[in-house]
Amino acid sequence: MKGVRARQPGLNRRARIRTHSTQVSNTRIQGFINYRRTRVMNMQSVITASPRSSHLTQRVPIKSPGVESLADAQKAEILTFLSQRPLHTVYLAGFILDNGVVSPLNRGSFYGYRNSEGLLEGVALIGHATLFEIRSDEALVAFASLAQKSSRTHMLLGEMEKVENFWNLYSAGGQAPRLMCRELLFEQSFPVEVKEPVQGLRRATLRDLEMLLPVQAAMAFEESGINPMEKDPSGFRLRCARRIEQGRVWVLIENGRLIFKADIMSDTPEVIYMEGIYIAPEDRGCGIGRRCLSQLTRNLLARTKTVSLLVNEQNERASSFYLQAGFKLRAHYDTIFLQQAAA
Image (cartoon, rainbow, N blue to C red; front, side, top):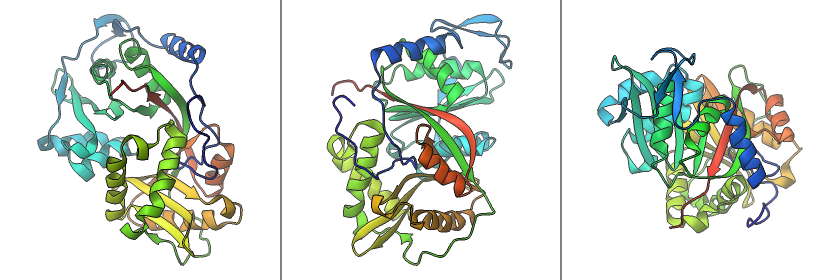
């Protein structure tokens, strides 16, 4: 990848255990944009039949009359809205449950889109990560227009078709794409195959932080081409330390060597979302990774209904690993990493 160091073998980010990342060429970018423009409306207008219909019949200018900044007083309403599709809204709900609606820890701002009756039709987090849950075309248009005003977005993540539609609206006036990934959403629920217990699998402590930081940074670099220990070393350290303090990082360490790691990024009553699953290269294929994953998943399912994770579509080995562990394929997602404006 041009301008990017070779990835370190055996490191995986977002539970992907990725084989490679692909730099976006000008040809691919243009093809990507043209493909989406054949599927949805152009940047200047969106066609919609009525405020409640997804069938396209009438032109409506892009604007956001129903958009509002959300506040902590609306937390219950927002979580109720998101709970209608918990598997796909776990990241948004997790931010709110962990940090509240308004917090610098969200690294962005929450917005809502209301219809003419004052009911929510969309919720979006716009910032470092841009995520959204919508019930109408109008909400999608409004959020895409609003996102164009943010110049520091690192990535856009969501279900494949919704991201395609969002991108067609956003691309002409927003940040340029730098890297695009198609991903598979996997879900696990009971029953989970019982494996031989792993006695040393435990929650990480702050004593493990120095061992975990370079591994986590290498996975982030492999995923996005940006090393957070170089771009934002203090913020990255604080975020990793906070997850450890929350009891969200699980490790297997033997003789001073990290064998297995997994991070819980979002924890809700309905779904727990995991990222950063790492198995040391020399320990792959011997069953220890699957034993750790089985034990951890059963532990998590004692207090939630399902466990989910994302896997890069190109990594067939990783997909096979999770399918053999009992995970089920539920959806296709797109992640678009965006070019950053000069500081």
